[in-house]
Amino acid sequence: MSETMRFDDRVVVITGAGAGLGRSHALEFARRGAKVVVNDLGGGGHGEGKGSEAADRVVAEIQAAGGEAVANYDSVENGEAIIRTAIDNYDRVEVVVNNAGILRDASFAKMTDSDWDLIYRVHALGAYRVTRAAWPIMLEQGYGRIVNTASAAGIYGNFGQANYAFVKRGLIGFSNTLAIEGARKGIKVNVIAPVAGSRLTETILPKDVLEALKPEFVTPLVVRLCAESSTESGSLFEVGAGWVAKLRWERSQGACFDPKAELTAEAIDAAWDRIGDFTGAQHPTTIQDTFGPVFGNLGITP
Image (cartoon, rainbow, N blue to C red; front, side, top):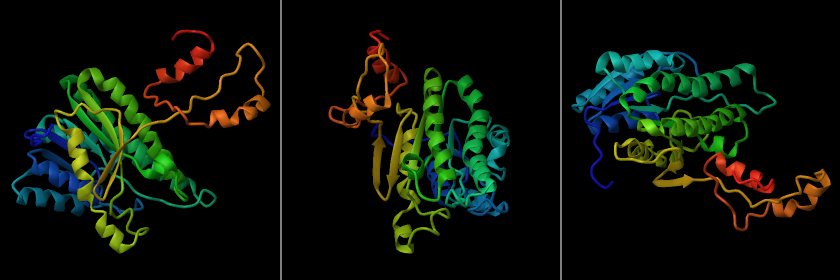
């Protein structure tokens, strides 16, 4: 797929597109011919406030460069209204990039219900509602590209981000399931875990590091995953500062115990080194890969 990737007449919806990663995505898709719905609530990085200036500014940038775009100022919790903006203006939607996000960091001991609920509503509920509104359209047209934005915190965990890690890991399972359900209808769904300078990281990273972590180093991967010729789906990528990597699960061969005999904690303890030995590791990709060794231990061919 080395030819130039164009999105002429494609309609691309990007949430949180008023700054940072979202702005970079919007500008690049527009440069490649897409009609872009620039969604941004216009609030702060911790979920406070709202306004139209951020989205309007990006739309103006796109139009000044000869592109086509329209602004939307709804919260991602009102995903139906965001997708309606695409339908009302362009009659369809082919690409959704769920990028909107905020932070409410606190150690778990100090985290409030508000900290937890707001992160859930923006990242998980918001991604669900935007995608849910676009999904029947993509099913009917037999085509769609969705990129969800996770985080290294969701993959590995991170101190002070139990709320954020929870929803970001959830987006991975959400995306994997949609990739399975959308496969027969030409819908590809993937996840990125970006490292980039943005209003979400400006308070936790040094200025010189932020300047090196340009959002423009993340956007090309998003474009690649959304290309019409892309067959990638159900995948997770880490990306930042010119580095792109695909992740996969790794599982030890484990230890098997007689299913007809009593299994005790002591027996598991005695086999602990084997259970954690990744020599000859397997790389499961589907839920069937879980049933395989379980059924095999029962002497059943799945």
